[in-house]
Image (cartoon, rainbow, N blue to C red; front, side, top):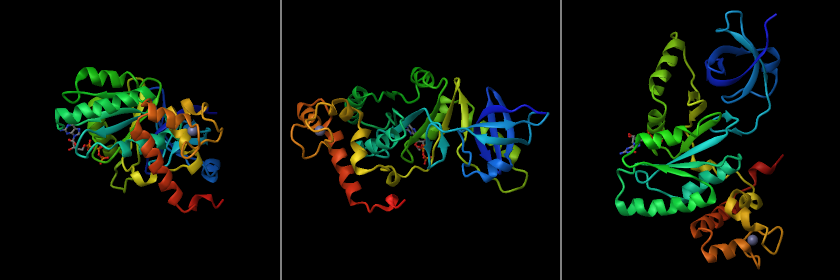
Length: 302
Ligand SMILES: Nc1nc2c(ncn2[C@@H]2O[C@H](COP(=O)(O)OP(=O)(O)OP(=O)(O)O)[C@@H](O)[C@H]2O)c(=O)[nH]1
Ligand SMILES: [Zn+2]
């Protein structure tokens, strides 16, 4: 009788699931009752499985354990942390897009850190403006990193130090520099990816999805394919809860259900007027609200 082990799906490829238990990786297939259950395993899932006697090939996965959270595009479960990669220029820095990503991640109970790329391409004036903004985000609780010149060892070490015992995703706009940054943070990552694809590609069609990499005692994932259109996945009345600095003062609003829009004696509006909440955050809140109000309730049917 083989024992049942618990591990974490780090890669899904051509019908196989690679499961990490510490540093050891087991290749498994989903089995009977798992196939019947509706819950399909994704990377990041904690699962139960029985390895074969040699421990390395064709074990069977029997159970997907409950998830703490799950991203849909791309599918990743049990995400602890996110590094939101934003470029200073090319593509242009956008507070609106930054807030959109943060709102999305807050919905998954993920408080992101921000990494500013392409500092070498920005003018000193642009950099000064952006770092002032980022100081405002740090006060909300969104720490940020940036490096001049790019990828300085001290900055890389500071980011790597956040990885331990966590699953961290790298997300952000296409072209912001996620993959480039990850290659600096996880040396050998490109080669490892190539080696895995080659080992599995026995002349058959190979499907690859997001993959988790072991780094500094944790797991990291690149997440390509995020579209800004899909980021506002929230009910209109719940949007306010995704702005931590609003939540922090909302207890002082006169009305319990205050949406911080037209209500009198609103502590959020008072804080914006006093300069303790960034005006751009409040403006983006209002803009997201009007976008959500204009949406047809396609998700509310069931
Ligand atoms: N000058 C400069 N170029 C950079 C920097 N970071 C990334 N790039 C370049 O920006 C381009 C896009 O970088 P990627 O790492 O592919 O961006 P990505 O976010 O992974 O993009 P997607 O895979 O499309 O989501 C590449 O040509 C990189 O070489 C930087 O700090 N400075
Ligand atoms: Zn209010």
